[in-house]
Image 1 (cartoon, helix red, strand yellow):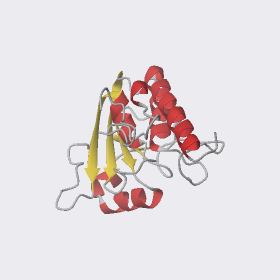
Image 2 (tube, helix red, strand yellow):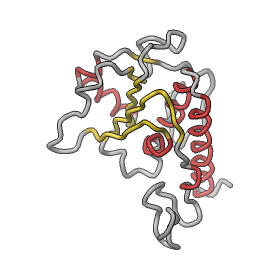
Image 3 (spheres, rainbow, N blue to C red):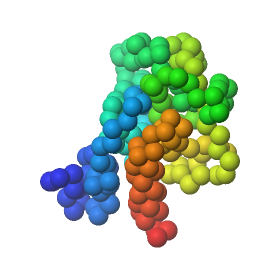
Length: 187
């Protein structure tokens, strides 16, 4: 395997694309003034439909932390000044927090709720909730107003004026969606 391209039978280890559907060429690093930390539930890490891994492949600075690994403490201790991107209660996008550090939960909706319930440090963070007017195309079913991790981070960055980073993430999401539809035989 060379340059992120999968062999004729294997998935690409970076983007998990199958033969002929590698997205690595779209994963071009983009600098941003907002530090993004993706806290990924351990059960999301190997899912092909997971979009959180692409946030850290594109954005600089950013990092991916794993939540729920057996024997590992919750990796959120020093993020006391971050803003939690989370739907529901909390400031809406009309009241953008001053923080330039964004914590994003990369999990199913029920896993994300449990993560917030179980980690007092997450409950203490100021929140950014995005308003979504119309149903969004996603790789999985989402509740009304729901976005994938990739889409949510793109929209949050756009609110901070990080248009280049937001556009790069939206482009990756569009390619992921096209890849998924093609794999399912819809294209």
